[in-house]
Length: 447
Image 1 (cartoon, one colour):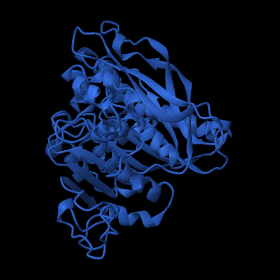
Image 2: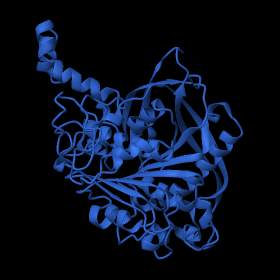
Image 3: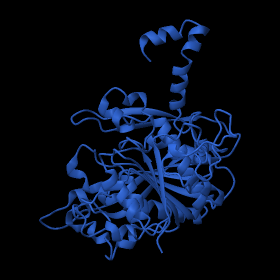
Image 4: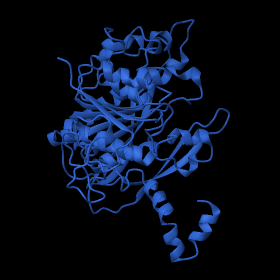
């Protein structure tokens, strides 16, 4: 807050009322999982208190692709340990101690990492709420991202009854381009390993996961995580891909379509996939190719900005939508948005340099608005396909592609009313004049 504004806000009730809009906006973004008053209907928090814990999972005998010995054509084998953050519905009435998450992201080359904190509504180690058969959501962050930047999603879904597991992939710095083969190799392997291990623990009745349904999985990924979840959900890698062949020693090629290890990338029980700004769809990369994307069978929501210069829109995410012909699929497009549509609003620690800010903030769209729209459609998809709530179809299936082209029902006169949807109308669950700049496409699976 600028110094003059701070001084004004300190002189009394009149000044406080003058500053109310600024203070309100700051409050809205200080708790990323709680959408503001302009959020569409399904974005709002659910009825559950939220608990938070971390666990560590170890996977022995993994190739270290960054230490490939080209002369000997060998890799060292290591035990890969992953930290997984768990959010879950918590028992009501327990003592609440809201989380303060900490994270760091690579700053500009030759500069130290930028550190930040994020306020949360979850309580660490809160006892799980009773109940069973909850959908299990696996979340994969982007290249060099951290799970602390995704609480807009993880806490919100847990409040709606889902058990949410976000993987800390431990990527090398994004600024070190010589190490990109590591996340390319590890993303789908990490997701598949974590999913299998959590499924095993859920079936075994482990207390923290006893309520999770091991056969009702949703995969959600952002950027590099989007590539990972699409692959783990069934999009088979192409041996001809430049991205696949860039991993030393043919390590990832062994998992390509038709190869002996291809099945090791797959997660069973997947009912829905969400990929936000996913890497891999551009023709120059050919990560899956049309044949690989045609292997997808699960309901799919793709989210992208049509000015995404990192993964591409028409030659990128739109390719994925067009080529995943056997999946019931949706494409949510933010007009004029770029790549940064998957993280929390920028914390104060990330607002000092433009590089740091651009991890979080789109130049055109307000982040809290993007997150609210994303939550609305992600909730609709998961409720419909993971929880089996057919009425959620009305929030997804519309004859209107351009959000602003829908008509407003004349009988709704309250200013903040939600549209009931219907043929030619504003999308169900949105408020009047709050659909501009959005497009929603959907396609049924081909026979």
